[in-house]
Length: 433
Image 1 (cartoon, rainbow, N blue to C red):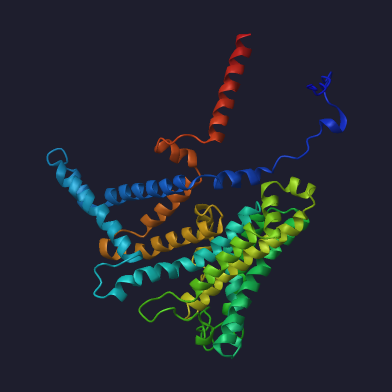
Image 2: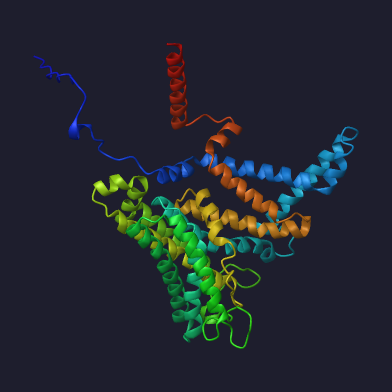
C-alpha cells in the first residue's frame, strides 16, 4: 500500500512579519566588485597575458624607426615592412627572454642563467607585498597602503640593523622580525580604525602612505636616527653584512635567501587562508560580512587581523629591499613603486597565494628583461609598463577577453544576458499595452 504525503495548504496571501524578512542581507557592493574582478578561469588569465603581449608587440612595431621608414613605400615593397615588423618585435621579445630567463649569448652557463636569478630577485618583494594585498582582497578589503607599510617595515628593520651588533644568526632574524612588526603595526592601524569607526580602508591607507613617507623622510634627515653619520643627504647607513640576506649562490648570481623567505610566506598565507579556522572566517567575511556576523563571526576582529597580516607581509617586502636589494643605504623611495605594483600582482594572481607567487615571478621577469630590451634594442622600459597595465585591464575584464577570442560565455554571463533580454521584452509588452 502506498501512502501519499499530505499536501501543504496553499498560501492565501502575502507573507507578513518575520516570515517576510530575508534571512541574509546582500553582500556589500565593494565585496561584489572585488569578487567580480577576481572571478575567471586559468584560460582567461593566460589569454589575457597573450593578448597583452600581442598589443605590446604592435606598440613596439609602431614606434620602430625601420618600420616607420618602410611603411612609406609599403604598397611598392610590402615585404620590407613586414620584415621590419618581424625584426622589431622578435628582437624585442628575444631581448626580454635573454634578460629575464636565459641568456643564450652568454659565454658560460653561469652567466646564461644569471637573468633568471635577477628575475627571482626582482620578484621577491613583489611576492611578499602582493600576498599582503591579496590577503586583504580575500576579506573584502582594498589595501593600497603597501607603500606606507613597506616604508615603516624598512624603517623598523633599519633601527635594529644599525643599532644591534650580533652574529648573523641573531642579527638577521631580529632585523626581519622588526620589519614585519613595523608593517604589522601600520596595517593594524587601518584595520582598527576600519573596525571601530567604519572609516573606508582606501582613504585610510592613502593617508597613511603619506604619513609614512614624510615620517621616514624625517627619520632619514635627522642625525642620530636613521641618517647616515657624517653625511648631509637623507639616506641611511649601509646595511651591516650580518643583517643582509646571504646569497643563495656565488657571484654573479644575484638571488638571495629573501626568496626562500618569500616562499615560506606564500606557504603560510596559503595555509592561513585555505586551511586554518581563522582563514575560514576571513573568507566568510570577504564573501558576506552580514552572513558571517549572523553565524557568530566577530567581523571587526577579523578585519583587524586581516590588515595586520597584510601590513606584516608588506613590511617583509620592505625588509627584503633593505636587507637584500638596496644594501648600500636606503632613502624614502626604497619602496620603488612595489607597494602599488603589488595590487596588479594580486589581481593577476586572483588573490590566491600560489597565484600571487606566479604573478610576482612574471612581473619580476618583465622588469628584469625590460633593461635588456632598452640596452640592446633601444626600446623604452615604458613599453613593459604598458604590457603590465594591459594584463591587469584584461584580467579585470574577462568578458572582453572572451569576446576577443570568441570564447563561450560563463553561466553568470548567460544568466545576465537572459535577464536583460527578458527585461527588454517586458518593457516592449508594457509599451505595446
